[in-house]
Image (cartoon, rainbow, N blue to C red):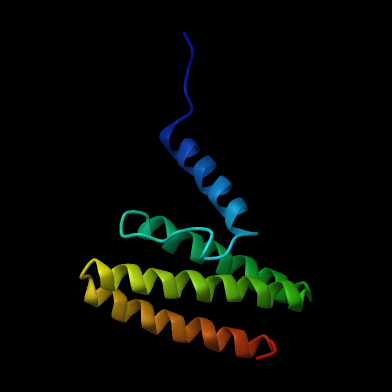
Length: 111
């Protein structure tokens, strides 16, 4: 009998693949929709962790680039939420977008 990977492991593999794709992609290359919004939120969280780690490691340019990816994805997510009529999620997303822009400033990234 062949055993398949547990659902959690399969989900983590999908998340790892998506995170790898996002590490070089921009919001234009990774379309954000109402259907994949939750995945995008998880990926933004992973990118946030990555940005803080890069900043701690002294990789300021990489950290700034990662935060820019977060900002692009969050902006796309806000637009997707608005297009779906999910106004409250869009408003929450705008709050997060301001936090990511502040993070960009805190990391001393060029404007």
